[in-house]
Image (cartoon, rainbow, N blue to C red; front, top):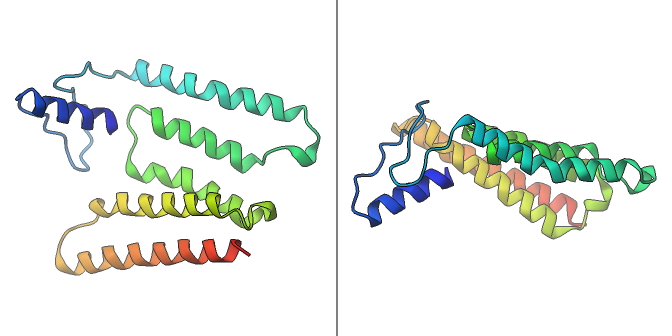
Length: 166
């Protein structure tokens, strides 16, 4: 999304007609100014981003059990890499990043009181929910439902943050 967003900005700066990117429709689009991204490029980027994650897992496996990072942490790093570098990633895929982070906050006692971590996860969760709003219809009844869901999600994030900041 950032790559294609940059392409739209560059096209406007050069006075070229911008790409007609869709809203929710699945299509393969070629950028106007930047070179096109092919599936092999996404695969290579994903492998490169996964290498530090795999290195961390190998290093952690040799440490005593109490000092190891949790499986949820490494799962989150993996899903984040897939989300960031995937060929076709939908906004809903961000749930695979946020859900393990929330579980880790709830399950790991040493994170309780770590307000920076909890705030970051709550902010990411709120952004995830906001990114899903355009997928819902825009008629008046659905508009109220959209914002009710957003408010509900935000209140859960706030409750989670206050629950863990003892």
